Length: 362
Ligand SMILES: *Cc1c(COP(=O)(O)O)cnc(C)c1O
Image (spheres, rainbow, N blue to C red):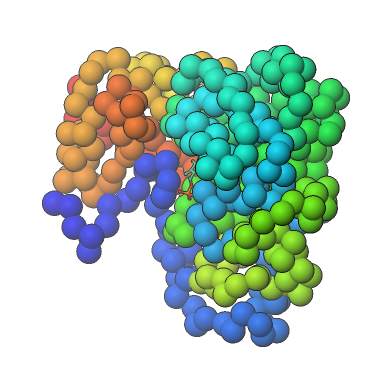
């Protein structure tokens, strides 16, 4: 029986299950956010994130979900008369393009079918045909379970369009998939904590390049809450602009220590091993939804080729094992379903969940 007092273990692609040791971090006494202890916590956490994301540029802690940074990227770093090229390959990348428009900026959409990747050649062709201030990319499209070839795209951008800013939604990729921010030459990337960080929702990490921060200073009407220039001024003191969710930062600090100590290569390998298991399972019983070479290592979207009743199967797992996985996103509901394999989810966990799905559907 569904009951909020007995929450199920979550294998939906966000929020994902959070381990007790991480929850314990959030139960620590809070800190005044202008005090020395807070600055220590903040500074140490930012330093760890810089290591995890391979950057020496600006790392900001935002008490918001990542969608706030969709908006912040545009309002801070795109002037009102400039145009953005938004690549669209699923629900989240589509939504970001809408947000560009909601912010009053002009947007051109480069659309591919859901399940297909955006390639460097497609972007090159579009950028060659007009004047764009920035492009938006989604690293890992959480609706279709697809990881775009962002390393190849970034290489092309550096060679051919060094002046176009590169904004990347890494919400379900950060600390699950390789991300060398400075080498990639990105200008903004960000993630919520309820995905591969394995922390409860309500908080985001943003990385901003020096040149993006500089550019923001010339953009009018950037607002207050998500103002990068004000964020940077406070970050110099290892503080945030407004009162942050200190409890999230405790958990973030803890999780960053864990991944940095493990070594990022090992963290990515761990995700790949889980993904390979789930993909093989999916291919032998159903199919993988997206173009196979681009299947994500942090979640799998499975094409429901046997037309199982997805909602009923999820309900059965909840009833028997107090565990849920994800239905398809939006228009992909029932046609697909999704299993998260990121953060503190383990190979044993995904073996258990897929085994239970087998029991219900064989
Ligand atoms: C979950 C998700 C978002 C939205 O994150 P919120 O924390 O709900 O704002 C955006 N983009 C992608 C790719 C996601 O997976």
